[in-house]
Amino acid sequence: MNTAGSPDFLQIRSDFPILNQQVHGKALIYFDNAATTQKPQQVIQGITDFYTHYNSNIHRGVHRLSQESTRLYEEARQKVQAFIHARSEKEIVFTAGATASINAVATSFGDSFLSQGDEILLSQMEHHANIVPWQIVANRKGCSIKVIPMNDAGELLLEQLDSLLTEKTKIVAVSQVSNSLGTINPVKEIIEKAHQQGIPVLIDGSQAIQHQEINVTELDCDFYVFSGHKIYAPTGIGVLYGKERWLEKLPPYQGGGDMIDHVSFEKTTYNQLPFKFEAGTMNFVGAHALGLALDYVSAIGMKSIMEREANLLQYATSQLQQIEGTRIIGTASQKASVLSFVMDQIHQYDIGMVLDKMGVALRTGTHCNEPVMNYFGIDGTVRASFAFYNTEDEINIFIRGIEKVKLMFG
Picture 1: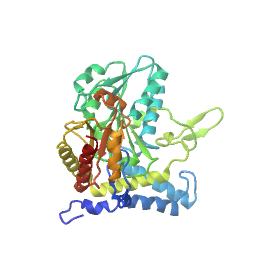
Picture 2: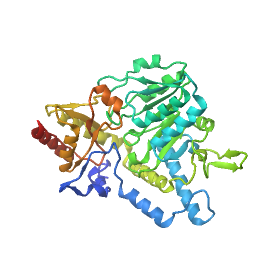
Picture 3: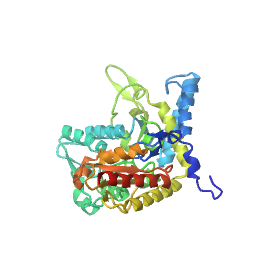
Picture 4: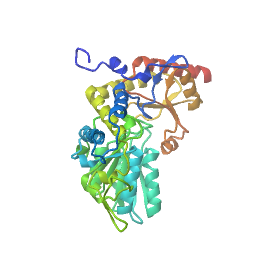
């Protein structure tokens, strides 16, 4: 922290050892944060410490290591509850990631509450992970999927929402932030309209959890999912938040150890929440690391992170707009720090390869958003996505790279 009390982001950057390296002889510039964020040393060391001192299966042993491992695992649950402002620890289920969380809800909810002729409402900008699981259950149950359309800015046409919500609509599933456009969707308004008709809502928070303050109680969403690796934690750990009344209603998604109360060959009864949905040996080390990542982010302050990333996005956008022949895909008035674009007559893969040689790591392709690409009539974009540890100097190098691409291919 500096003397003014605001975070010293250049100092904070030193917490991320992976950023202190060269690629092709150039300093690494990591602009692929929407795909996964880098991990601070505090999280990396925490994983090492866990395996060094505490490694033992949770909820199963009376010995000290198991008790300590269980304590750290359950402390992580409490940290998640506090971070997203859930009402109860019972509402926090650990999963392998957002995809696993969505599949769990789609399967369990579908088996219990979907029937022939029912409708599932998604948005046009959903990640494939929030499309395919619903398609699978819709095909199995004889349901149909309807879509909230968007405009050329990448904003949802909410004026059509009232007509899309009908007595046949049984669940709404939408992303809070688009991974390919950066659009911040008005999910609270969507939730309110759906609830007026008694329709539950799942929010995919995979691209929101690292960029803005999340309060699931205030949002009043029925389900909220995210992946740890999007918010400076390791891969393989994620969260399914569900209102307690919904989690009580839903059957388990998977069976195995720890999710049971009593088992016989005649009948099995299930454990209490949230353990009913945590079958087998969970990623307890990953959960602990997620808790450490949330501690890290909380120490910086989400408001400071939001301001930092908004400034980076504004600067990068203004610089890119000055390069003739570039077109930004996703110009919503409310955006997270994602900048997707195309260049006239230059393929995104060529752009990505040239920038890689300059040390700039970013994403090219469809970003698991083929419906979005189809809407814009393109086969992909270049996506630069920023985190608080990025700098304006890095953006300047990125912009020089785009100018070099234009000279090479234009």
